[in-house]
Length: 318
Image 1 (cartoon, rainbow, N blue to C red):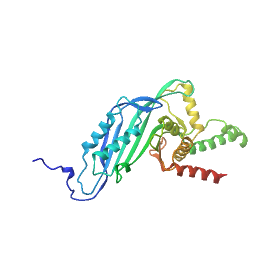
Image 2: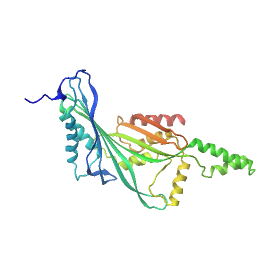
Image 3: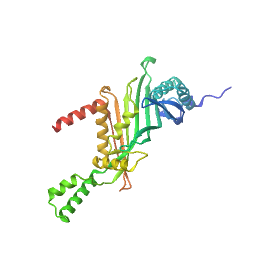
Image 4: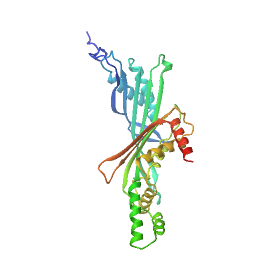
């Protein structure tokens, strides 16, 4: 006589669990959709279902099977990471008939080509592509809701505005005291010279909820993140390129809070027709070089809220 299914037994403490799952499932795929071209990556998936109070545990093997079988259907095809997450989430609900909600996170290191700012040398940069899908079971199969997100995490540079202002004051003081210049002349000189500051390696993330079939190229998201920082980074830099990157950073100093606000504005300006209720999330982490700690800022809102915030605050400043 077969032993009873342990997972299906009643638990000693009948309390529901919001998320139970399997993390870091790695499945190789050949055709991720990036810059309108396929890129070979090995994404990893974190997959979860909810557990009702009357059941002791989930069946982890069913979750792994869902990921492997769904991903295998995309072999040698051009696909979007968020679509795979959505298909896995729907398959999880089919396999875990006791669950009402399934959530899938996908992540993949991705390499893309770009050219340096001055010498136009071809170089290869990396970013992290991220996707998420959330499926919720309805009273009928056709009522099941499905939400999906796509995002990236990219690296750049931020120059500290506060330190730069302090150095501006020091430079003005030296020009007036040591070189006997009048204060207006000293300020004009300082305003026309690149003034140093301490630099931070910065990591910006944006995640955008999108309706089914809405095309977002990950390169658009990378540009949104990088343009919110002082300057981008490059694996290869010749001397003219290095000077250009540093000068660009010094001409665009920003706090971690500035980067978040710039990303929000960039998303609003880029995706004009994205539905109002779509959720946005942003995160910026700056690795401090003159402190031992890092600085982090985060924001989550809908694109409708972002549009209204930008419009209202722009109007109030006029």
